[in-house]
Length: 304
Image (cartoon, rainbow, N blue to C red; front, top):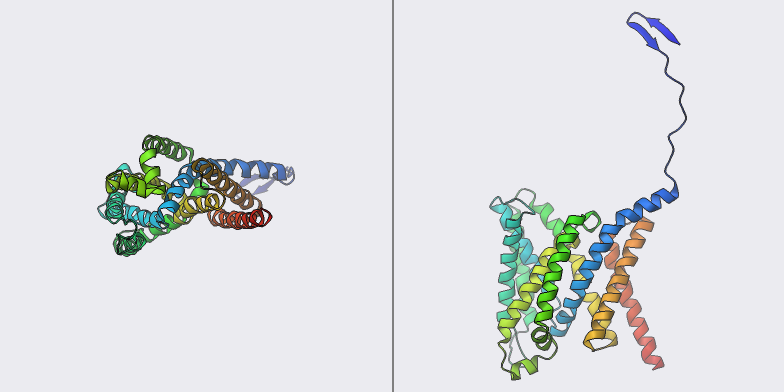
């Protein structure tokens, strides 16, 4: 039906077909699972590399080295922005890697062994972290969006990671894994049996430089995806869980990989089920897994 008006003919609106169909609970669940697939794959790639390197970190007693190297990488990235380099470009990553290489050199040169070292290496690691953090704040003050860049360094963006980023990360970590496999005898001996390396007359600082440089590359690639908090959890917690139960290298690796994967899966699942922030929840689940491992170790020790 139509009605007349001074401005012409106007048709009556067609009858409504009813409210738009709402998505079902099953559709919501499927959509949520699809959203979590890339973060899950990214977590598994990160766990595979970081939990193994964490075994070296615990054995060397340089627990906070990843925080220092991550801060050096952040300082390098901010410096790139200061000279008008595009963020997330190859040149920006090069700046971050150069800063990380400088940190690796410092850690290699400040290595201490036994009673020879007057200052523990952890002190130098802490100094590098503090100075790099202060320098990053100064640089960020002169860079548009510098504060956001620092915040991203802490939190990462694991929930929004893309497949191309995951592919690049997997390829880079595979290459670094081959590098560590080829040099495993040197790296494992220096980490777990440094006295043997000293008796053999190895140039330990030389090999330390290459270890820390490769470690820095791993951290530089991981931090933009997961953030400093998650990277530290992936690195340290699975290794600590593994050392609670064994000293055998193969078993250490298996337990570290398994506990890291379990904590990541729990965090992702609870994040989906409870609509909670993914990164912080994953970190909390690493803490829960560690507490469970400590309890299990106590029970096993009491019954054994």
